[in-house]
Amino acid sequence: MRNLNFHHLLYFWTVAQRGHLTRAAAELRVSQSALSAQIRQLEAYLGRPLFERSGRALQLTEFGAMVLDYADSIFGLGQELMASVRSGPGQRLRQLRVGAVATLSRNFTENLLRPLFNRPELRLTLQSGSLEELLERLRVHNLDVVLSNKPVVAEPGRPWRCMRLSRQSVCLIGPPRTSRRRFRLPDELAGQRLVLPGPSSDVRSQFDLWCERSQLVVEVAAEVDDMALLRLIARDSGAIAVLPEVVVQDELREGRLQRYCPIPGVFENFYAITAFRHSPSALVQQLLARSKSD
Image (tube, rainbow, N blue to C red; front, top):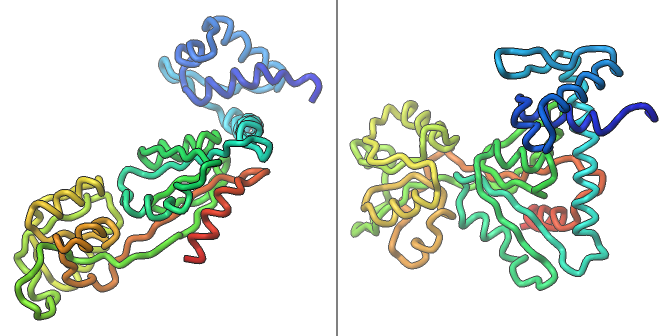
């Protein structure tokens, strides 16, 4: 261990993540030739090649992939150490960094985090993006927790912890009805123009399967991946929308929209994803414990 050059290992780790010498050299602020020399020295020390060329790109060898798993752990632990130092118990201001996937209801996120808003000792940072982008930030400890409507499973180098926070019924929601008669499924939905979540949504997959089983044909007026935009279209289009009540909770409370009925067997799940840490964030643990009790 005394002879392993961790500087060389850092250079290898950066090249492996970027997949290209030019980008890695620019990030590390060294020349490509110097970077190549450092990688060759590490390969000579380890006794096996780490990369093989594929055109201008570099691909890991099987041995290189194994070394990368160790490098991920080593440098991820270093980043965790610095994150703990910056936000440790000795600091007056504590920080909680939360990522929320773009397809997640903003209302759900706000409801979950609302108990933290009035804590003066806490700085709350919220970031939005795709699940893949947020997981990468979580992996390198730039986020403490990711909120998602899709689950993830642990894999080598990415030991995710995935906890379901809530499961909510997906409903038909539209303009206030004049009739007080209960909305009948599936009869009254046949031929209706609907506003739906996008095709990649788990809710959409469940709804399409329910329509197929019910032998129901509907017309798609709009399909929207972003829940904030879906909320606006549901509010202003006059069409019937398929979504959880939490997305339009304010409009339902104000009477601008009405819940017609839940769709049998169709649900939206909400998850909190964390990464394994040697010193788990106390704030994240408090947040998840409160959510579980609620």
